[in-house]
Length: 213
Ligand SMILES: NC(=O)c1ccc[n+]([C@@H]2O[C@H](COP(=O)([O-])OP(=O)(O)OC[C@H]3O[C@@H](n4cnc5c(N)ncnc54)[C@H](OP(=O)(O)O)[C@@H]3O)[C@@H](O)[C@H]2O)c1
Image (cartoon, rainbow, N blue to C red):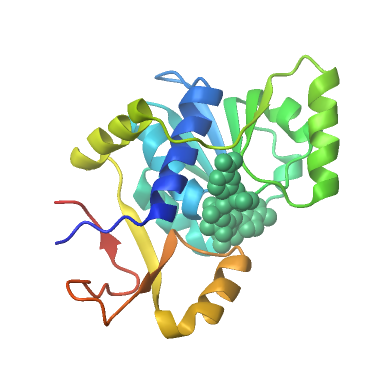
């Protein structure tokens, strides 16, 4: 089976790794809650956290419970059954890819937090301002490529600790449909574009887990 990781896939892998290790300072044996665990960043974050020996609680919709468990999540909170804003679990680290957590949510549930995404500009401003005036360790970052992290990811992929889940593939003729689907932020894993006319490009079946060989 061929290797299939596009440029965007590498960016999301780096984002997940740096959220957990660089900014989250995750240690073996710690507990981490990953809010938005079934999407592009989240499904990598669950697998990387498990590879580093963390206890993972994944937050996603009910339809993705089995998916995140298959990725290795120890516990799942389905946000359409239990509001994350009233969840009373306590974790060493909170990783928020979906972006809907308030400052109070981070403080109530975590010892430290990492913001990966935001829902709105207002939400972003409010969180960053509160982060500046409080002692609670809340990090926000933009992922950047570096050799050490790319090598770490290469080892994790080689050792089959990370799989890419491709939910759908789109033809290059369907780019508008693909963008609309991605913008809805309900992706399970990743979606990919397939350029059928390019010699050597391998057609990938939608919904198939891609492993590395
Ligand atoms: N900081 C950086 O350097 C960096 C880099 C890349 C991306 N990002 C940001 O990271 C964010 C996530 O990107 P992505 O590519 O992972 O997005 P994505 O693939 O669209 O995934 C979004 C996930 O959010 C989940 N979700 C939807 N509503 C939710 C809710 N109310 N509570 C919890 N989860 C919910 C969805 O799961 P269900 O279908 O189960 O609801 C979906 O799997 C974006 O804001 C993006 O801009 C930041």
